[in-house]
Each structure stands twice: as C-alpha cells, then as structure tokens.
Length: 550
Image (cartoon, rainbow, N blue to C red; front, top):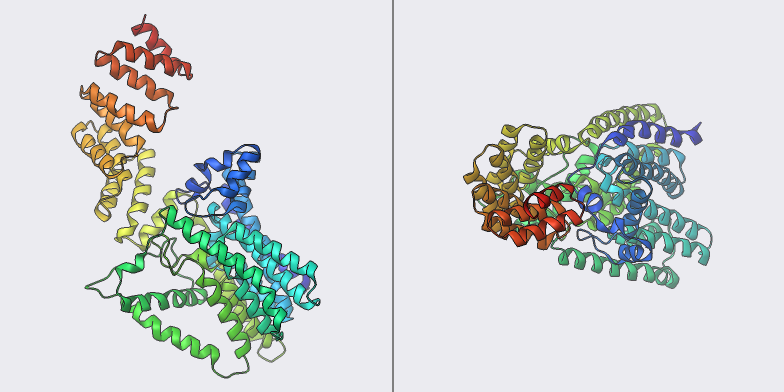
C-alpha cells in the first residue's frame, strides 16, 4: 500500500492545482519574463547565445528562459501551457522530495509525510499557480536531483560517475536560478548527518561546487546591481532595528510553516512610527533564540532537529535576504526548498512514533492538519487567477502601505479596461497618494481625463509622467493627441518625433504625425509620413495620402 501513496499525494495535488491551467498571465513578472521578453523570440544559434548571455530583469536564468522559449516556440503565448509546465515540475518535485527524504531517513513514513507537506502546504501556492515561478519549480527539480545523486554517490563508494551526475545537476540548477548556491553547504550537512568522516577527499570534492557557487553568487549580485534591481531597504532602518528585521524573517517562516494564514503575495517592509518597528519585530529575537535553544538542547531527537533546522537556515539565507531585491520582506516563494528542512523534522518525529502506542493519534493529527492545509491551498489557488484577484488580495492585506501603490495601479488599469472609469480613477488617485513619483499612473489617469474631455488635466498628467520618466513612449503619444486636439500641432509633432525615436516601427504614429504636420502647414513632411505609414502596411494612410497629397 505504501508504495502507491506518493502517487496518491501527487494525484491529489494535481487535482487541487488543475484550475491554474485556465488562468492567464499576470502583470507581476509574467510580462517581463515572458510576454515582453525579446529573448524568447530569438532565432537559431544567435537566439541560444542570447539566452546564455542575457540578463533579464536582473536575473541570470538561461535554462529557465530556454524552457519559456520552447513553450513559446511550440505553443505561442498560450497561458494554459505555461501554467501546466510550472505545475508539472512541482509534481515531479513531490516525487523527488519523497525519495530524498526516504533515502536520508531510511523511513518510508518520513518520506510520505515530508512529500505530503511539500505538495499541499499553502505557502507553496505562489510557486505553482504563478507562471513566472517556473524559476523556482525548475531549479528545484535540478537541485533535488543533485541531492539525490549526492546520496547515491556517498552510498556507492564515491564513484566519479555519480560525482559527475551531482555536478551536472548542480550546474543545471545554477543555470536555472542562482539562489541554488546553497548546495555545497547542504551536502556538507548531509555528510555530517550521515556520519561521514570528513577526510581530505570529503573537503576536496566540495571545492568545484563551492567555486561555481561563488561565481554564480557574484554574477547574480552584479547583474541585479547593473539592472537597478537592488533596493537596500535595510538602509532606511537603524542598525538596532536591522537586527530585528534579520531575526523576523526566519521567525516568520517558521510560524507560517505551522500556521499558514493569513497569506499574501506581498509582505511589505514595516512602516516605522517615530523610528520604532511594530512590536512583533522585537519579539522575533527572543522567539528565534528560543527556537535555537529548543533545537540544540540535549535530547534524543537533537540530530534530526539540528539537521532539519540547519537545512532550513542555510537554504533560506541565500534567498535575497541580505541585499533586498524589491519591496517584499518575506515572499512566500522563498520557502520552496527551505521548508523541506522543517518538514523533515515533522516527518522524522511522526516516523519515530510509528511503532508506538501514539501512532494512531499522531496519524490522526497529521491527517487533519494536512486536510486543513489542502483546503487553504485550494482557496489560495483561486487568488492567483488574474490581476484583479491577486492585486485585490494584496490590497486587502496591505490597504495603506506606501509600497502598495502598484497593486492599486494594476487594479485601476483593469477597471479602465472593463469600462469602469470611476473605479479606475479612485485606484489611480490612491496609487498617487501612496507614491507620487510613479510615472505610469499619471499616464493612465491622463487617458481617463481625455475620455472625460478634460484636456487641461490630461495635459498636466502627461507632462508630469514625462518629467518623471522621459523614456515613456505612451505618455508622448498621449500628450501629442491632447496637443493636436487643442490646436498645438507643432507641439504634437515634437512629441511624435520623440515617440518614433523610441519606437520607429509604429506605422500608425507616422500617419498621426503626418496629419499633425499637415495641420501645421508642412505638407511635404505630412505626405512623406503618410507614404511611410502606407509602405509599412497601414492602408488607412493610403486613403489620406490620396486625399491630401495628390
């Protein structure tokens, strides 16, 4: 019976997550990594070279991008396919977690417990229901495969063939996500846990792994810095407060492993009141110290506690916590691999009770907890359906946090698209109140003013957007329309000129500039623009060309 249980777990997980294949893309990394990623459309060898030399949004992840490229080449931007692939790797990872735990512990029960928690824990919904999180499920597949190969290597007399498999899977993991640099430390933990003598070879074999980890870590930090992705949010806090931010992160994740609610796609940095953090951050230090004491105090279970806890700490430490990337302090997606350590403690604890009188009670408690997790996961999956559901959920949990300006902006664009200008205006105004230096929201609010025939307010918003971001084609196009509508055809031509410098392949804008030139008295320039637009395939420009230029 036990040999079928991993497949039962996988089947239940597949049923819970099956809805994601009907979901679309989100304006949260999906646009940057997939929809607007020119590398995915690269051709031939040049395209492959681009994959391995390109940094996208501050991240060097060529194998993840290669997977996205294959999906696009075979199926286009079919969101169902992208969702299926991301979720499919999660199902594969469940099997790998089961085998890894079974090999480490020597107990099938422990493997089943850890695999079930890994499969159904609500903190893992983000990784499975969000297309972009292939950058977690794919590298985890290689990372876990490398760990399994390492155990085989260790158990089979340290053969070169098995070491080569370890290295290749590890390299694939690094090429999928640089956060996999924790691998050398994890295999050292495994050596210690399994009681391997730490002779010269035990250290020498780790050198290639450590070197590649260091190289990819440096590449990751440099690429994020070059792309402007590094946001040193800690700098806004005193050294005293940073200590508590540091202890809050692992404390938060430990608590959420046991009590996974409420959940949010964003956990923003705390707002200071007169330089003081909320009280829970100060409590995190004694709480974390208490956890450390529980783990390492003398007990018959200390070996399992120490291994699981250190696995968690080592892997979570490399998930962008020292140098903060973006506004979220404790993203749920950072737990995907680290939680295996905490789940291992639970698995070993239940396995230890399996042949005692407490077996039935332990099983009952675990099954009830797992059922509760499955229900929460089912509910949480629905939150990731589209922009409105996910950003609406973020706002529910962070209604007046300054960093929540972007969710309000996205909700506004959705309402504007759906024909609800009043609701869109409210969201844009809230976004501006929270963060008045975000150029895009002024551009979108300006479009609403155009619809309301308030050209003066529209022009003010487009001017503000351009002052904040001078490389924003949409704002120049919108301002040109307002200027033309107001009779300022020369100003409109100037804006169209800037737009076409940034987007010279837009056939419609050539026609619009042509009409603005015509109205300003530049017939020669107008006819040249209309002809260019016609040559680019804009048939409407041909009618205007015949009407005004012959």
